[in-house]
Image 1 (cartoon, rainbow, N blue to C red):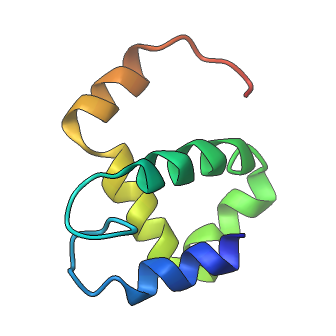
Image 2 (tube, helix red, strand yellow):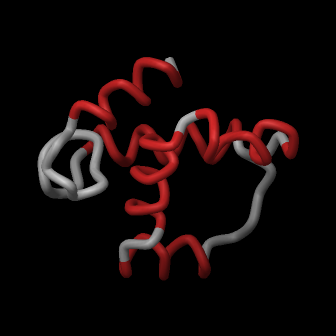
Image 3 (cartoon, rainbow, N blue to C red):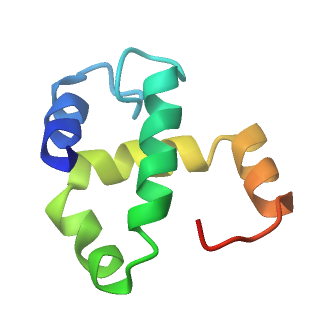
Length: 80
């Protein structure tokens, strides 16, 4: 599914950094949630930006949105 998401992110030419369109959608939140799990693997995390540059941009766009970033910094840390 990561290759598919990479292509979707690449095809979104809006420049917004989101998977679809110019604003946050459920697709962005689903992507963030799934990537949070796989990015726990240090080997994957190290190669992720080079392997999936458009998806990495989308992930960073979403995780750096003010309200999402604030929530992520305040929530309890868990392994999943």
